[in-house]
View 1: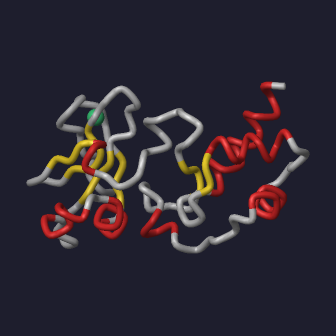
View 2: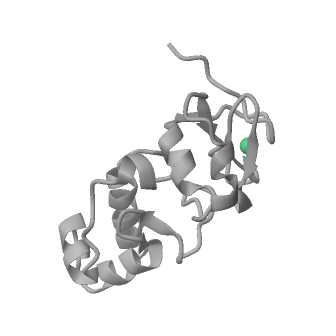
Length: 141
Ligand SMILES: [Zn+2]
């Protein structure tokens, strides 16, 4: 088992993340500082400004080229980062009778997938969050 890392900003347990996702999502000026051999973690506490950190480097949410869907609940934040498909676009699609991921992708014409390991800020597939966003929108009506 990997040791759970503690966020230096808020002191809460963080989630391990692939270095490739860190490198892809930081602003260009910081990319040279991202050592792919380091262990990286991401703080998922919505109230904390820290984003990624390693033993030697701590980044804030402002050091990234994207907004983090688990820290920023606004509608213009991506849920699917491969297609830059936002929370607001998914809500809009659901209100127009889309009921599945396929429906939403067809409706929005944003159906690029398969780059999650790099583009998604958690380095994971967006599928679960995508499904939850669809069901949350249903449950609000
Ligand atoms: Zn934190």
